[in-house]
Amino acid sequence: MKLVFASNNLNKIKEIQSILNGSIQILSLEEIGCHEEIPETANTIEGNAILKANYITKKYGYDCFADDTGLEVTALNGAPGVFSARYAGEQKDANDNMDKLLDALKEESDRTAKFKTVIALNLKGEQHLFTGIAKGEITLSKTGNRGFGYDPIFQPENYTETFAELASEIKNKISHRAKATEQLIDFLNSTK
Image 1 (cartoon, rainbow, N blue to C red):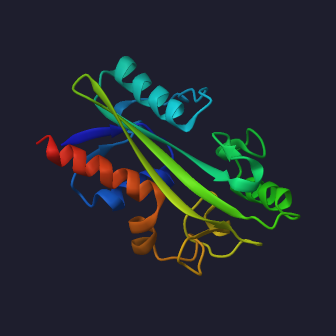
Image 2: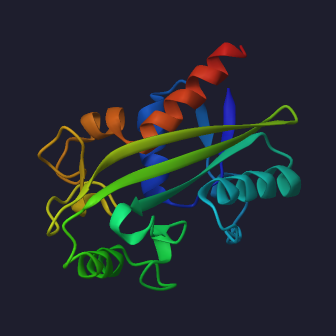
């Protein structure tokens, strides 16, 4: 099966391909000739995933899936949430985002947080949503050089390392994106 993954984020594409392990062939936006920035104007993570999937299906006619992910921090009432990628500004710089978050939490004792990924799948005229959550906490400083985004400051539950310190084989089993992708794979396998 071939599906378009509505993303230009090479890190996400690589991570999803690793999780899928060849069970589904992924076409990137570049491969279908989509070079424009897909609007992410919804006020929820689910809404952004749906917007991106619908954009590709409507404009290019492909069955596809899109994801959106947010980091929700308890002490910040769920922020940065839907604004995670541009938390410190439109430049979408991961280090700036992490620095701003660490600064916002410097007086906080509650550092619990969760990553949430929602995948919207458009397949044969129907839409399906899959949600993955990884609970954990925000560390006091950045550690590790694997992964991307907030990985160097997110320590998942039951682990002493951050996502950026864990081997990709481990992260790709326990992460929010892995959990949502597993649901996607199970659903696609059930429709064969």
